[in-house]
Image (cartoon, rainbow, N blue to C red):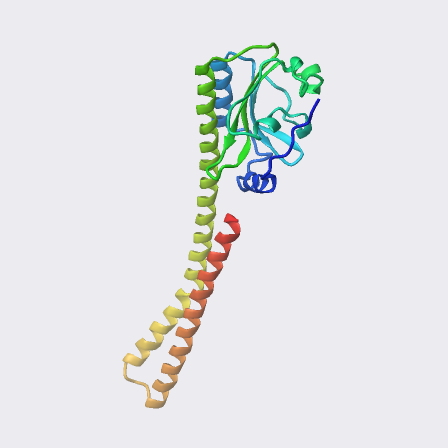
Length: 243
């Protein structure tokens, strides 16, 4: 067995993978449907959405396989992420890289593998959409094309999933901001209005009016400072969430 080498951009690739915050999350129907479709189109018993982590490959979706992850050094997908095209092993026992691989000589007894890298918009390979069989075989061009199309849809689902989480975080920041404004700004503004209502009655002395004007200016400065702080806080929250 020959373990897959690391991609040249491995640190950046891992950073991109972690940005999606998808590792070790629950199975989701949209991803499950893709592996089910891949398995049917290619007429194979096993299909996986595999994400290649630092020292493991973890399966976001699977069909025909009981495992949830494997060590990276025995993974087929570790080879898939080295390129941009489909990676095919027609017969694992005839390939020195995989002939004595534990996934070949023991369950799930992989004899055929075809994987398409999951390439992000930034050009990083997060893992693969792959199909597997327990006997040597070949896929035709239409099946390989379908597998490539499905792999792009996996990436779109990952991006949509991330976008939804980011929108949720923005909404949370907005809710906190509105609560602060309602509590800490509405009250001072109401106080200012009451102060000017009293002044408008014309019952105050010139000295009292001067004091009120000075008080109003201080309150306005405090409100402006509070608004600036809220704005800066909101920006920091969003920057932290999206890093």
